[in-house]
Length: 339
Image (cartoon, rainbow, N blue to C red; front, side, top):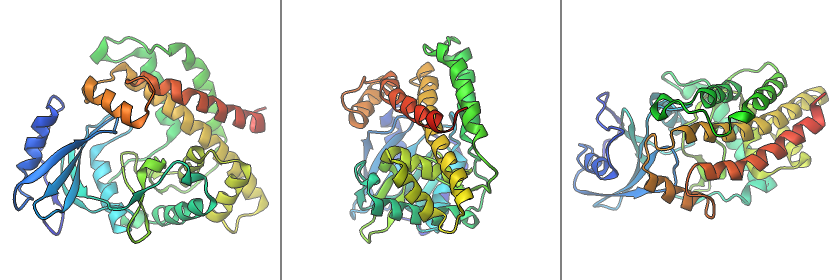
């Protein structure tokens, strides 16, 4: 295994490849010292993941994905490298367009229940601050993440449909006018800020405690320069935090803020939580327009079964799960701040 990552600019992997073709390509890469065992790992809904085991027992992870929606592969690769420089994620070993391989991150995964524990929130915020103050570790161009713009783009596509599936509008197109008004109101709640290096997918599944006890972040599909409170709010959304927990998180992040600053930032936290719910809903609506952009129906069903047991084995099942949570978050914001 090379001591520095090998970056290959030649695009080889194709969207039309089967998992078996991808496995053959991974096995033939020049970074291995012998034969390797490659197994597909299900769970991702927009990319393929493979676990790789070398003869000496060393493990690594291959991720195959394509530019779509908010994800740009060159940005993902640089965010992985920057996170490693900051001690927040595993090392990149190899990358080519649409394929990257990182060291396997040993450790115990975060659980959904843990995310609501005050000490865990303290730990997450401590690591977030390392990330948000680590823009110097980004050496190449990465994306910029503004969730309200992304939601609007999703809504535009849901209105028109996609050429790949006959430009048929979304089955949920009647929701679009209401969603446009909501996103405008939520965006207006956000004050001026300095963009920071952010993860932008602070779900429990993307956090792992290393054997040394350090919290590590994986899955950098959403990595970008963006608003640091988005990361805080998304974490609180998954934790189903009440106001006391939200205020505690803010004070951990901004220990010296004034009462006026706290009032504004709490409003932003509630706005971002509602926006995070709406982003998930609208992203799924857009994905459903071309649900098998990359993954096969069988792969999608397998991943849905593992990720969301009991839900429909297709992307539409996500709408049923996510929509009630978004409406709850919107009502929470509206009850506090809407005129």
